[in-house]
Image (cartoon, rainbow, N blue to C red; front, side, top):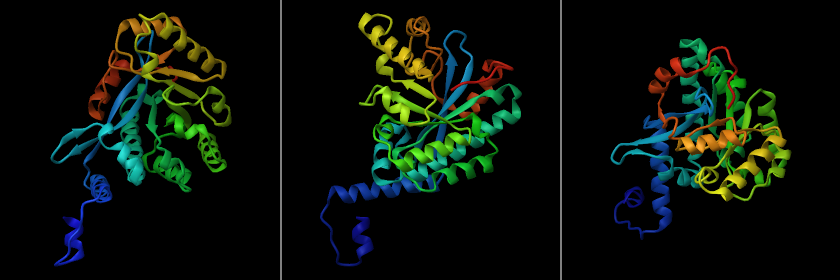
Length: 285
């Protein structure tokens, strides 16, 4: 309909999937302009004590007619169309601004690390390092408290430019994490080519870890190998005390999941931090 209107009186268009994609792309870009996006935060905790040592920023779309949408409803399309670039920049800016506020209000939150997802499209940006440097300068959030999370697809065959950008970010003090490890085809050997410091184990390695010996054995092997590469391991999708106990037994120190806390708005997390951040101890993502 909008394509016909733009073409003028007497025009017509036959529906194609491309028209639908363009319409959704325009809607996504307007979501950034109209402040329809919101950031929720999920704590990363020490499995043994439950202390919050990091938070992961997760975008939500407060759609004007469809309500609050989870990333699964729009991120794949945003990645396909390129809208993920302005969305990703906005998320990083808003998350850093909120985290800087927590640090100013709560001295115990100064050790907290902030994890923000970096899309495959963003990694290809020539100006990526400058964009992130400018966001940190604008918000006052320290580089050594920021962790950027990459998907496995980014690390499979990194080109020279990608490696150079990630090394530049690492030299700034920013941590680099591999998210959802185990969902693709990446091997730990790929991590040697990149300045990765954190490995997040996908929830598929956690489900059944306390009831199925085979699942336990696979998860333990991943944890041991990651530790051999001197990577800090974070287990995702922990939903029960039994899963947490099994992870502790195999030497995994950190984790996140509904067993500890669901993603929440920034103001709710700020209230939670005052009683959950370990004072005087360095945070790790």
